Picture 1 (cartoon, rainbow, N blue to C red):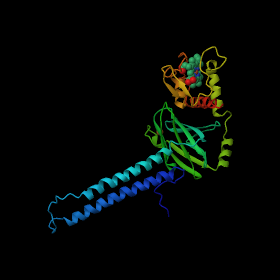
Picture 2: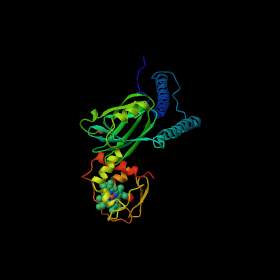
Picture 3: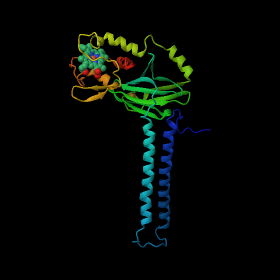
Picture 4: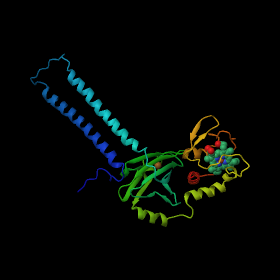
Length: 308
Ligand code: HEC
Ligand SMILES: [Cu+2]
C-alpha cells in the first residue's frame, strides 16, 4: 500500500520542486538530529552528581568554530543557487504555448479558451503541451493553486499575471483558491482535466462556441465604437492598434512602456493614466461598460492584430 503524503507529480515542474523540498528536509532534518543527539548526550554526561571534568576551558577551538560557520554557509549558498534555478524556470516559459484566460471571482474560476469555449471550475488541457494561463480577478485577490503541478499564482484585480505548466499525467487534478477571499473561499475550486492531445482536440471541437475569443473581441470592438476612432479612415486622430501587443509605446510624459495585457486593459479603463505621445487624451473610459470577460476578449482581439 502506498501512503500518499504528497499529491501526484503531474507536471514537468513538480519533480524539480519536490527534489528541492526533499533536499531541504534532509539537510534540516540532519542538523536537527545532530543537535538533539548532542543535547541528550550532554544532559546524560553532565547530569547532577556524575563524575566529569567541569572546569571551564579557555582554549579556543578555531577548527570547530570555522567548521560550523563555513559548512552551513556553503550549504545555504548551494541551496540558494539551486532554488533560484528551480524558481526561474517558472519565469522562463517556452515560446510556443496554448494560452488560456482565467478569471477569478467570488467564488469560482471562469476559464476562457481561445476557440471561445468557456468553462467554470474545470480546466481541460492537453497532455505534454506547454500551457500558458493569463489570470485576473474581477473582485478580490485570489490564488490559483494546483498542488499536483506544484504551481501557485496570485490572481489580482486590475492586473494580469501569468503561469505556465506542462502536464505529464492524464487524469483529474484538484484546483484550489489559496488566498482567503471571503465566506465561500473554501468552496472555490475544481479540477484540471488532463486529456490526451487527440481527446483534447475532440473536446474542444464539441464544446466550441459560435465565435472564438478574438472574434468576440472584434464584435465588441465594433459595438463599442472603438473602430470609429482606431481606424485609418477615422476623422479622429487615434493610434492604429496593429501590432500593438508586445510593442514599445512612447508616452506623452517621455517614458515608454511595453504594451502587455495590463497596458491594454488600462488603455480601455483608465485611458488618461498613460497617454500615447503625440495624441490627445480624448479616449473615453470604458470602465462601466466592459466586464472582465469582455475585456479579455478585446485583449485577445488586439493581440491577434499583432500578427504581421
Ligand atoms: C473617441 C475616440 C476613441 C475611442 C471611441 C476609443 N479610443 Fe482608444 N484611443 C484613442 C486615442 C486618441 C488614443 C491615444 C491617446 C491615449 O493614449 O489616450 C487611444 C489609445 C488607445 C490604446 C493605446 C494605443 C497605443 O498605441 O498604445 C488602446 C489599446 C486603445 N485606445 C483601445 C481602445 C479600445 C479597445 C476601444 C473601445 C473599447 C477604444 N480604444 C475606443 C481614441 C479612442
Ligand atoms: Cu478565491
